[in-house]
Image (cartoon, rainbow, N blue to C red; front, side, top):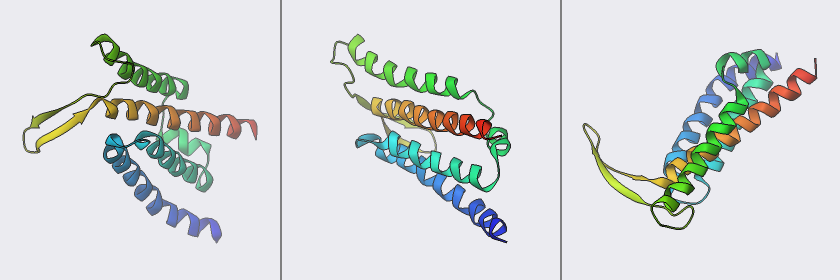
Length: 139
């Protein structure tokens, strides 16, 4: 009975957590920690899926190489820092500009967003790697 209740609640809660995680990733890019907290929230949603269902479901929903996800995140974060160096600024210097996108309008894009995406990928990839390693070890 409890697993049925958890199953039904998790189907709704996971989507809410992931949606708020994406919101924090984009909203927090001008404030410190946007990518990290977004990654933690996405990891919590994935852990909830793992607790509710099993490791096979998590791997089916996210069929990616977790070390590759971590490496891609490190590439994004380091690339953002080196981008400033190549332009003559100190490491991890933030720059931004405004862009016009049809049907959306004018938006601001900052280099901090790419850094936060890198941190997000590292946190989610590391969490998934830990979960899959512990889950496979418990068989």
